[in-house]
Amino acid sequence: MIEICSNDRKAAFVVTANAYPPDSSYVPPMWSDFDRMLDPARNPLVTQGHGRFELFTALRDGRPLGRIVAAIHDASNTRHGTLRAQFGYFDCADDPEIAAALLGSAENWARERGMAELVGNFNLTAMQQAGVVTGGFDNAPFTDMLWSPPYIARLLEANGYAPTFPMTTFRIDLADIDPRGLLGPKQQEILADPDYRWMPIDRRHFAERLEDSRLILNDGFDDNPMFVPPTAEEYRFQAGDMMWVIDKRISTVVHHKGEPVGAIIAIPDLNPL
Image 1: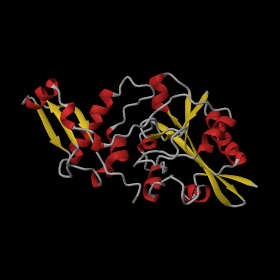
Image 2 (image 1 turned 90 degrees about the vertical axis):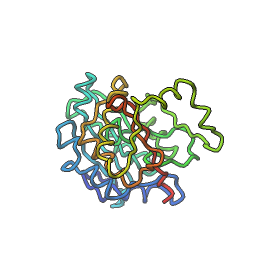
Image 3 (image 1 turned 90 degrees about the horizontal axis):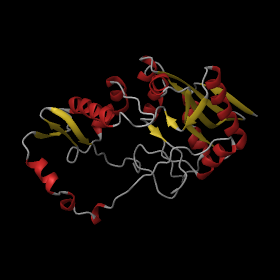
Image 4 (image 1 turned 180 degrees about the vertical axis):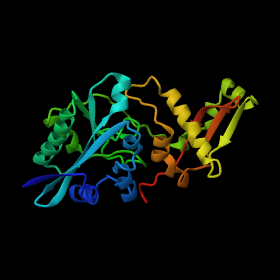
């Protein structure tokens, strides 16, 4: 017997431990991150009135074996002229009945709120963890990357979903790269120009550099499909904890004549931990 319950974050959190084997490449989020992200009283997506969501968990004989979040990013629909809902945090056992029950719950939730389509996987927006793995399953995910077993894509296709927005992850072996080869005459000119300032991202200046990086992101991604500029509160909510893990040796914000124009943020891969 399958039971669907709503907004039980503790039940939803244990789904992956029940559904995926111990040797799976899936790396669960920390409970504190999962709990606050899916708490509508704390997530600025809801508190600032930009969106809404509901969490569904599927239990078979009382055991949590699947979960999904149905969400509507109202600000995205307004910006892009769509009637679109998203699903996210879609994880489940290799069980067609559970998958169908979860997707059906998300579809009904979206339909009841006037939406015309449902897309995913977005946790919770296009600017957070996104995607369903369709290849390269043997490659372990890095920090903040989604991973799903091969059957998740198969279950989605069995319920009428089709791949729509392909994405690729690239990996570079730094031992094979000479950084000096990246510095041509134009790059050397910028490095020598006093109008450019290279601002370190350290704990003392973290709040300032975080806001700089938000402004750079919003400007650089403005024309990208599905993009909605995150507010300062949303950005802090998503990225504020990065202060504790950022590698300040190779992270920097670049200012040109006092305005932020570029950033690189590097963190270690925490997934093995």
